[in-house]
Image (cartoon, rainbow, N blue to C red; front, side):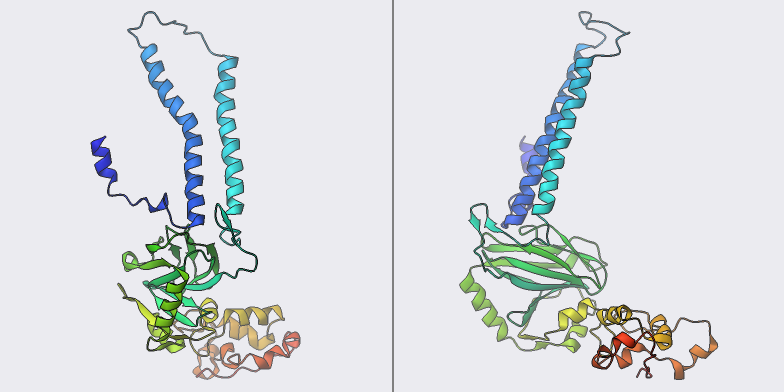
Amino acid sequence: MLTAALTLSGCDWVVMNPAGDIARQQASLVLVSTALMLVIIVPVMALTVLFAWRYRAGNTAATYDPDWHHSTRLELVIWSAPLAIVIALGSITWLATHLLDPYRPLSRIDATHAIAPGTRPLEVQVVALDWKWLFIYPESHIATVNELVLPVGRPVRFHITSSTVMNSFYVPALAGQIYAMPGMETRLNAVFNQTGSFTGLSANFSGPGFSHMRFAAHSVDARAFDAWVAGVRRAPGALDRATYRELDQPSEAVPVRHYAQVAPDLFAAVVNLCVRPGKLCASDMAAIDAGGGTGAAGRFNVAALVYDKNGHETVVSASPRLTDAGVNHFVRSWCADPRPWRASVATAATTALPSRPFS
């Protein structure tokens, strides 16, 4: 017992004793599920030892019946008990899957406090970079790197994406992990129920700097949060697209950074893979396709575009004509300002819009 206690003393029990209501409900689900499974596991383990002892070769008092092969009562016990456990586990998991859906808006702060009608959640935009985390607060027009500060007792809605490979946004004290994927936006609704400082991390291996991809998550009261926001607003520098592209370069063990201003469309540009100036946004490309495409010109433009964030567009074609630099046109050049095609997108299927050389 002493050895087990010493071994477990180094464990971090934050997953089973979290500071957020969603994580606490998830911990309760783990405990209930474990208890239900132990209802079967413990008796089976005990009976295994009992049968081995009772029917050992040296116990001549035990009934020896080598021709026994069936017992209706025993079959009922063997099958009915596990079936009942499976039904119970399935019911609990089905309910919890819907109630703890990360996209589902919160209905309560904790088990005894419901969310007041009209309460607006705090919006936080999360971007996984190599190998750091960027947090944008659109309401306050500020941003931070590797520091997440949230007001206690206020619902938070995270909008999560990645600039490079898949990552996993995870604050064990707050809620379960949610994947961050390039070109996509995932969401998480959560709330802190108590103040404190916790650790957030990436739970998905993403390269050599993965072990340093951690950040501080602070839960503070409303006054402290307002004071923190005011302090960030006094920080020098702004996070525009050019600054973001510098920040997006791979780096490890990055210290906390604050940005007093943020480009209002930055997160949308990250999700749509078009932070770089002149890059055709994925949403615009989808809108063009939904409107019928761009005719004959668009077939070449779209096929010739390899979508990557660093701008390594290449022409993929066996035609010698398409290797001439004079004909390497890209649809993104005339879509930098989307207004010209929005008015005529309905006729784009029959009218080939002109493309201009990419510079």
